[in-house]
Image (tube, rainbow over all chains, first blue to last red):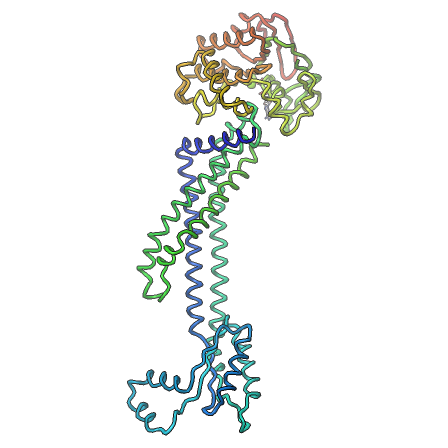
Length: 309
Length: 226
Ligand SMILES: Nc1ncnc2c1ncn2[C@@H]1O[C@H](COP(=O)(O)OP(=O)(O)OP(=O)(O)O)[C@@H](O)[C@H]1O
Ligand SMILES: [Mg+2]
């Protein structure tokens, strides 16, 4: 009995979707624009995340050790740093590596290379490059390092740490922290407003489509159809709007990412929107499908409520 | 089978549509309701269908007081009634067959019965050639036949028809009335409103006359007197 109703409701929904021609096309079109917007928001946020983390990765603070700092003390400090929850990674650069890097960076400067070669010993100390999970956490790490500077003393009684370059980087880091949180907040607000607008427009379109059927709904009631039997096909139509729109919007995103890649690769460096889109195609489609189906069905469900009273 | 007991209806805008109306309808009767425009005829029919509820008084159907019906009991009750309107009110995206079948589907009738009954009833109203036509492909008379087929498909105890011939030419009017008479002869109660003097005078059945919401005449074999 219930199964028979479900079958009839589903069939009526599909048939109405097909026969309602222009109304269905209009609703699908609006829902497609909505889901396209949602898709663009998804891609932008992935893009934003990638850009932010790329910039974040360029920031670190460096600990410069004295030349005679004992290796086991450096290791001890490294381990203590790694155990801090704020620290993302700690890179140890030995004196020899530091020299290689320094030489490499200055290979065109004959004077520097020559002076280096004349020195009896490697003038550079070992270095730790520390990266925090969030830019705002560098402050805490710097404080920790300052405490360590007093504790980590060699046999001679002098600190093994020559300098920490936090103060120098502080301005850049602070500014970056501010920018990142502003961009994230702005992005969130923009997504919220845009998403909400898109949803309202779709809901209104579906409401209009159902408004067009209000007299037929009255007839169905008078012929003895129950509320759920009348409502069912409209909800199925909403589902069809969502499914069709998800497919169309996913396709429409392809040329968009293609175009964005071609106009922005030089600007944004390593993150490629097209590659991101193609490798996350399934996930993007599922998100749009889910959004579309829920939006279509829920809109229909509530839009028809008024006429079922 | 239908009882109106001191029924009054005042719409929210304070217009009085029915004023203390009392009458009853026995099974197998054919009752016409006449009256000037705005007399309250449609309002009276809408009460039987539970589209409106009385402001005071009560309407009952057999032993059911319609005031007590709520929720799912309303559609179940409506399946015992067939409705016909002046403007046909077919479902525009459904064929003649599907319009008639809809009333059965909504009542949960199995598919095999629908497949045999619907063509039979459409043949009864003379539409066997237009089974697969959509409403926009049908003439007014043909649409009203589909509507009648839809109204009788569930073998209702009573047919309620609000100016069923209001939009039809004399030939179609005559034929539709003949169909209604035939349905009545087969044992279904019919309640119809009309402005057509000719129909009333040739029918020779019971006539209830309303005037500004009050019942002013109720004649066993009535004439159209206004
Ligand atoms: N939904 C409504 N809200 C307010 N007033 C209404 C409503 N429906 C009907 N009326 C009023 O109630 C009175 C009776 O209307 P009704 O439709 O029952 O008349 P009728 O006899 O069917 O007229 P007609 O012959 O023109 O169809 C009229 O004065 C009308 O204006
Ligand atoms: Mg009327």
